[in-house]
Length: 103
Image (cartoon, rainbow, N blue to C red; front, side):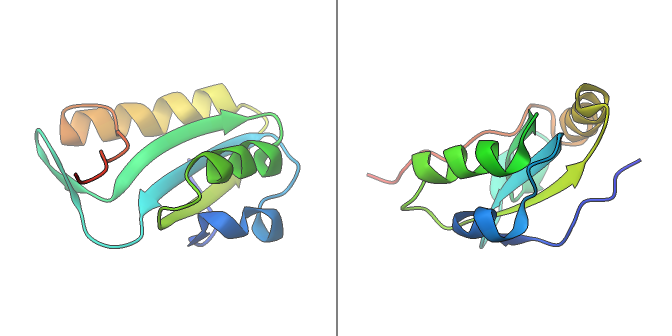
């Protein structure tokens, strides 16, 4: 059901993400984050009517952090988003979350 493109730097979204409907994933570039049932690099899943615009907005909000992104165009992004989120939550015990900055 999922056929995401290769990972690319979040700040390069304009070069990779199309202005199409779909789902995107964002992960830390290095390392893994602790979740209740394991470790994962994933921090966010989102859906968009325009992947390029939505991913660029996220990139602007997190411009100082080193994240990777990938996307999948979909005519039914809500269905795909529910599928990937449910799989993540089942495996890791919670939804993905952005890491809190170190003090």
